Length: 317
Image 1 (cartoon, rainbow, N blue to C red):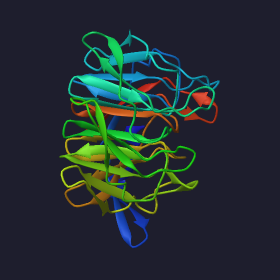
Image 2 (cartoon, rainbow, N blue to C red; image 1 turned 180 degrees about the vertical axis):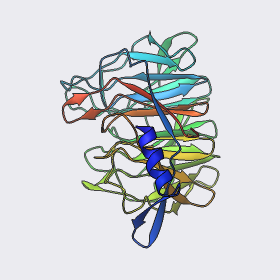
Image 3 (cartoon, rainbow, N blue to C red; image 1 turned 30 degrees about the vertical axis):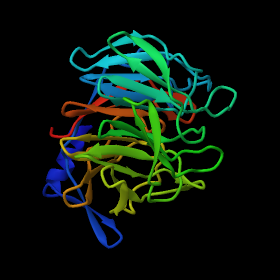
């Protein structure tokens, strides 16, 4: 599929321009998708992921029958292999959050099989392959929040406790405490997408009062402040529960909509472009992560089909 796009772009003198209101969105033929060893757990959506070193950890979520899950797995890109780990010890859940700080991973919040919202949090030690409960999330129990890591702390915010939220909290693993931070600069929402570049966290898209959002914001943890950046272009399909990751100082957003477009954000000039589309099926509620110079997308849902395929993305090919 990649070669079709390359031929088309050669025909167009290596440059495709899409109308975007009064802006022009450039397209690059670069970006190569390769299918890898499929996720060895049950096909699912609404899982969590975090990375530690050169390994990715994936677990929880719901299967195609909407049954919540607790199993946990690690993926090693160097070996293209999956290994099952000790199951998450809390209630089976979906729409939780996951993040890592140093050599430990953290999973919490979400919604259980009885539609009860949760705020418990657990720490995973990969060396011991063991979990322990840590301090509950400082905000209200909720689902569909986002999480990221900066400055030696984990940040969790937005989501829904029955109402859409915009509060943010920072978890300090050394003290096992949560501290309230500046509220997200945009509207309260669920299903947003985030990534971190050079000590700034970027957050956007999602749903606010059931209306899709395309605004985009940067968070500076040292200043505890949000700055609005250029919105996702108007040509972008409505998007929630998408995947975001950063590679070599560039951010990528994909899935979570009715198309396979890969949106690329360059923070140096606050601009967007597109690259070779995602080559898996259209989906939402997938997970994504970056290791070394590649991004990865796996699991997710389309209509009633849950996925277990895994794709890697090399942005430079």
